[in-house]
Image (cartoon, rainbow, N blue to C red):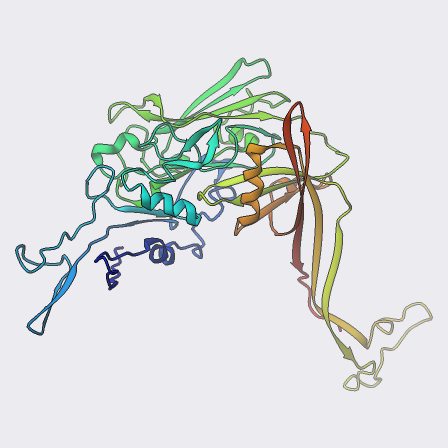
Amino acid sequence: MTKVARIRQRPNPNGYGMLDISSIAQSYIDYSNEDAPITNGETTIDYINGKVYEDNNYLSKKMYIKVGEEYKVSGVLYTYNGLGNDSGNIGDPEYTMYSSYDSRDLPIFVWGCSLEDHQQQYHLSNPTDAGVIGSNPWIKDGGANKIFDRIEGTSYPLSFSSLNLTMYAYDKAVLSYLNYSPDEAEKDRVIYGFRFVFKDASGTTLSTQDVPVTASKGGNQRLTPTSSFTDLEDPDYHMIHVLASPNDLVTALGISAIVKFQEGYSIEITGYDHGAEGTFTFVDPITKTTKITIKESCDNPLYERVRLSWLNTLGGRDYLNFEVKNEKTIEFTEDTMYSEQMKWSQGPSPVDTISGPYTINRLGILGGVKPYNKMIKTTYSIESDWLDEDQIELLNGLQSSPQVMAYIHDSNNTFSDYYPYTVKLKNKSYVTKNYKQNKLIQGKFEIELVMPMKIQNTI
């Protein structure tokens, strides 16, 4: 479906018309659609049936910008909007906006990414660069700018985390990547597939799985590994979300007989381009390698674990494990009503008849103050591990996120590690210490979980 929006913008004193495209595009990104991957595939990738990918359906859009002009000559208004105008007329405007990067007529790719004012200023002042999402001076890896667009180099996932992650085998996670290809000539910019390498604690490879982004694996970019693109122009495929939950990956890839996670085991995840069309070949790595190292898990830990998952400003997801150091607190709110103790419509007696001194039927609960609309509010005080200064950006992103989910571990409920709750982030504080001349930071937060009680009003 193609939608056209026409906006008239008056020029500034220097004759330039300026327009913020993000404010227009925002209304076309459909987060309310039930088929939209609002958790980036974290809760929707069907790993039980072998899926490892999710495209960005409903959360990616593509926009072409046409620019025209209006003139009034002898009282007659002439509008040149790029639709059927003849060249050589008054103004003869350039109707199509071109990419500053390579001077080609390219669409603007839009997804759920957010920039701070300073980042936006940097982008506007460097029109021939790929912008801060291409090479971001605000996000570093060992002093170098992180790159998220492969036109600038080997790309990172859309995350503020390190490429070296430590996780429990049951932890949930996805990695999100820009996967944009403007036309057939640039098809090699699309990620053909990902290589998953599973190793034991000694570094010995247990299994290597090359998985193209195909329909059977959830990506829908290609029908089969040897077929051509489903639709190069479809913005659904301009982002790809990759399963990174250790246990779920083993299930999806059918290697549970080979890989049985223990402490120190690892997974390496890398995106590759492809060879000639019609072949099933992985050629060169075009993303950075993310390494996941498995932590030892205790069935009955001293402190219960909470894993937070949140949508970051890059449009991907970040994660951090916390511990509950204090007992959770439970509060409640409720409405009440008063009920008459006598049921005058009940005959022949306005109260229940009892058959003995111990069988009183409902006499003990008839009438009095009755609660309804009860709401239970549970607050957890959580603490992170000690983080280095590079990781503090994670905690800053947690506080600015519009969507935070919590996996609250319960030793008596194995399903708790698979079922997140949407939570509200409350109080925060930081503790710092120096260790071997390195500054370490620990984050302390309160998260609030509010649940309505799904019961009928009492009599």
